[in-house]
Amino acid sequence: MVKFPKLLGNRSPIRKMNKPKETSIRLLQWNILADGLGEDGFLATEFSPIFESADGKSKSYAANDFMKMVREAKLADTASGMTNKFSKLKGEEKKLKKMKTSAEGYSELKESVAKLKEETNKSELVKLKNKFRNSPQLEKVDREILDWSKRFDRIKQIVLQADPDVITFQEIDHVKQFLEDRDFSAKYTCMVDSSKTYKPPNYTENKGNDDLSPDKYFQHILNSRAAFAPKSYSNAYLFRSKRDGKAPDIDDDGCAIFWKKEILKPVELGFLRVPSDTEKSEAVLALTLQHLKTDMTFNVITTHLPSGDEPKKELERLAVLNNPSARWTARRICFDDTSWKEVPYENNADFVGITSYVKYFAQRKDTQTIFALDANSRPSFPPIKPASSSSETNVWETILRDTGLESIWVQSSYLEITGEPFNPKKPFVVSVNKMRGPSSNQPSKIGEHQLELIDHVFTNGTKSKIVTSVALNSKELVPTAPLLYKSKEGEAELNLYPNSKMPSDHLPVVVDISVKKQSAQISFSYIIFLFIFLFLPFYLTMKLI
Image 1 (cartoon, rainbow, N blue to C red):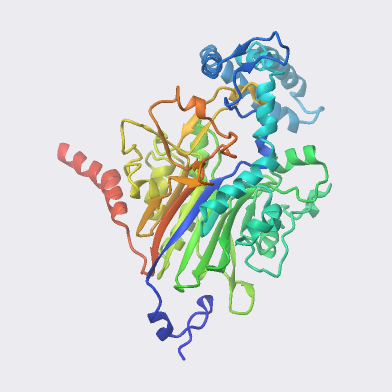
Image 2: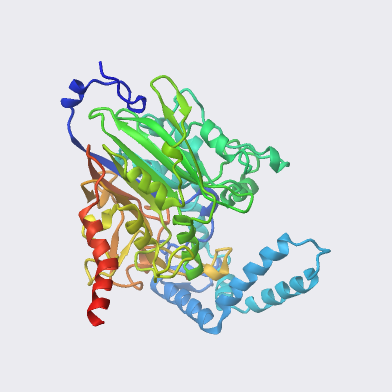
């Protein structure tokens, strides 16, 4: 019998001839909002009218009037330059925290911080925060909507009813809980080795001994045998530790891939570590799965790019997508029919960023690739020139150009390949619709309405079909991304997430992707993309000359 590569096991050509050549994979992509990051004053208007306090004589506001008040306070602070002072205060507080009291300039910086605090206390947003400090309706949002136990049950219910074959999560900081939940674990796992039990990392007073210290990070995530890439020393871990003490399941938030055990089998698990000059580590997660019925394999890659709406934040995102000057390292384990073993990437693959890592999988023969992520960047983000490029670009353009994959939003006619909405009458195509309210601990973010499309799936699958809702029962439908709005005001403001129906500030993306066994190829939309962004401008320039 002819021997096939061990990665795919030993199978005869005759057996393969009878296998279907195409199948549909249902993917659920979702930033579920980490437990450790969830209780930060997210605003919901479903409990209205909204009272200033529990005092029976306090003033109340209808949802529309309350949202108008928040919007006007935000505009006033922006116009007065107060939002810039908030940003400056945040930066100087970080510097002060790292400085020793004996360091030169410490006293001056401390005085500057105190002055900025005094100035920002005059902010309209701070006044609004103080005004609604004891609002029973806003307290109810924390209790009835943001509480993790309620959110977990709702997340689980939505996922199980959506019935995906593969799940890509971001901001998951309860891996152990998902794996030990009876209903969820009956169908799904993220453990490539079923004989292993997942354990959250151990942190100590001596950071050199920590499981996720920089020199131990890679070995720990490989040894865990879990398709989970945590962010070490994360804020989610810090906040939960302060709140929950020494609870046994406190974990960092990160990206995870779960799959349906009865139809899929993992054959390769890899991580691309993102370069960092701090103690913190994180990695891109890549998993190759074999479809048991068809024997086809496909790759799933997921990550979570840095957040922020400022141009400098887009530059940060572009720097992790492509940065040849940084030191990138990738390691993987493969199953060889008997056990999981570490295997170097072929030809010592030289990765220079996330897009080169994704492209490596996209160019594999006889397999197809799905890249799902919270990009924290909308397709229409203003182009900017990164250090690694001679021209302006953004995250959307860079991923399409460098990977050769297609966006499911383009395949399903929600967006043009340029990132513009397919339906100009409803220009807001969104996966997030959120705002922090007066109870947030971040006054500068109060009233900041984020209504945009930042959750993406790219693939070289032949076609995709968006699932537009999930039926929880005969009476309740839960919306999925994308939602379409005419404007930020009105309907969008009155349907903010999270709420009692949607347990995250992101909508889940549920999509059926057709995959088939084929050699790597350049997609038609990729050719169109190259024509629009590269060849057409050159042609027009030459014509003018």
